[in-house]
Length: 188
Image (cartoon, rainbow, N blue to C red):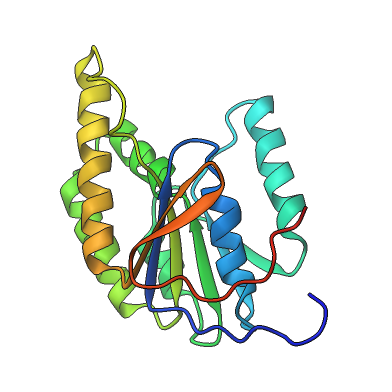
């Protein structure tokens, strides 16, 4: 940024939702960059193959080196508890976190409640990215239907707790709850 620094104060919890490749992660990063706080990135993805390793590496390169990165594919409450009040936290993403718990056959409702409790206890503002999976057809198998239903329930629970909820479609943010603060221009 040239000129004056943005000094945005984000709410305690912000939810950014959208479809795959909608621009939601890039928008969430712009929210984080609008503050002057040190940045903490909590990653929920696991690199199971070369393509995913390349995606993770590209995300890290795009963010830059001035982030503290915490890998938390399952235990977001512990990762949130390690944040300081001076930081701002980005969790990318709730969908992979939920998938990890689903595949581990954990109690998704209990994990969701633990996560919501951790948000309330976290001393830093948190921006969490999540996929909107409910706009497609009804899946043809029980596991995918269970995932779609759980993702919808998780997003609703996060949206109820968040003071700012933004959906991103085709790279364009739309506030569903609260107001989007002034942001630095997106990189071109």
